[in-house]
Image (cartoon, rainbow, N blue to C red):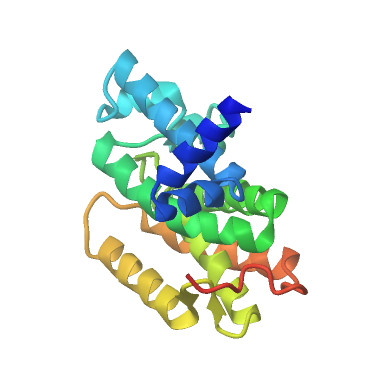
Amino acid sequence: MENKMQKQKIVQKIDPDILQFLKGRKEVPVNTMIILINIVVFFLTELTGSSLDGKHLVQWGAAYTPLIQEGHEYYRFFTCMFLHFGLTHLGNNMLVLFFLGDCLERAVGRVRYLFIYISGGMGASLISYLLEVRIGENVVSAGASGVIFAVVGALIYVVIRNKGRLENFTTKKLLFLAALTLYHGVTSTGVDNAAHFGGFLCGFVLAVLIYRGQKNGRGLKKF
């Protein structure tokens, strides 16, 4: 009885915003696990070499056209999604995924979110690979940005189905975010724009195929 009272006192002392945040994490176990996996993989690549070394990331499963085309190492379409070039690359992607991924998982559910994440990410990698084969370019590719664009594409469709609003996201906000990020990619060097555009299209199409809207209004709460 005494231990129970002590726990209640501790809970009461915690800031309400922190409590709300912790409760919210229980609703998005898949996205939480995905973020943790990305972080763990990043530190493992750092412990065994350097995440800025392209050859090292290839050993860990980064996408590299010759190995996929000639060696048939198609698993790289999947593994490259969990590798990042440096801490900044990881931090930027995980921060965006933290907000957008949480929202999408709450809206479509755990299984559908995982399906969109994996299928959208692999679709982005495949489109990037096909473009590299066509233009004869061999580049080491890694990162979750293609997946994030799949999440954005899926979110836009979900928001449209929910009358232009989902939590604190609107269609205009998401379209502006996508357009701004795509423009930044096009005007920057070292960015896999094919994966970005491909991920966006894959995410939108996947959402069209598996999302039918919220009958109970779940996910429409404003924050």
